[in-house]
Length: 418
Image 1 (cartoon, rainbow, N blue to C red):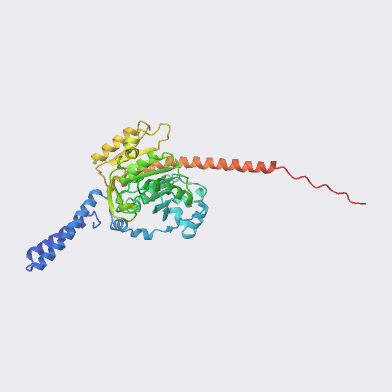
Image 2 (cartoon, one colour; image 1 turned 30 degrees about the vertical axis):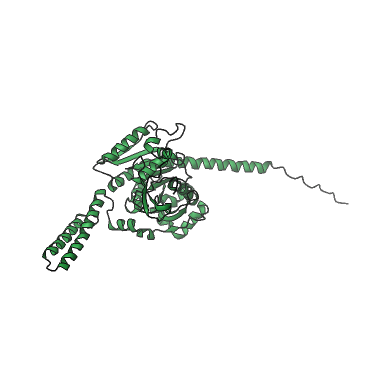
């Protein structure tokens, strides 16, 4: 009732505001009238913010709001130092030392790591969720598929946990389809809540797409027991993250097998970048492709989708929007029609009574995961089987080479003297 969207909270703000106005009217001394009038701005301002939050249906609990806006929840999430990471087996051993495998085999394990991009030279936090199957004996040699989840702007990767509730949604899916397990990777796509980089490679600055689409997958594949970047990887996002997912999937078709776009857009907006392209700088609004029309075309999915070479594999796409958001609906329908010139089936979910808001993305998350994970899992099984055949062939060849290796002649036996 008194949560950020609760009726009681709004009524409380109205009562406080009304009480302060009465104080302004009844106070005899000017100083108290001015003081009460100043205080009245606070509940009025909070009411406006709360109304916007309710309209977008984003923060549903105070804990989720505080964690997302302040990053306080991050302090409770275990951290794993990825720098200098060894083999996947070493990572599994390290995780086993700091957590309970019996518990993780039931609920999975969420941790935070920092990735320094070899290609982009960016260093940012990434959240990784290992499903319960990662810790179960039946999957101990299995390399899992991966879904990279991209947040909106402004936002943090932790919003997938605190606001979107991705982990309980995923666990409920695994209850009925336990073999459709995947590792969830949630990178910081903007480098801070003040920026909106849109996962773009700025020709004269920050290489955001390179970090998200290259550095993060390659680093996670070095750390955890997952498939290398390819068709066993999926990418999905909401709002700005939806644009990122569509743009990355079209530009890097060999790096992903599926893309989920939740209320995304299909042409880049003006980016909010740090002044001087230095992380932590004052945010400024710019068109990063000004003077680069060719790059702007490539980074406009609704245009570039018509020019992707026929010879190239095109990842599968899944779209969702709020049915009441006319702009989102039209954009998604147009993009879907373009996709269908290359893809036979492009699922499109319209959430009733929804707009460009959190309730739409939460409603679409479960169906999107249910659609995306099974084909990624099949790709992972095929990749594991192919790797096993290659390993067996190499072992057989090594044994044969050892068997066929010329042996040195035996030394002649000298007969003993009588």
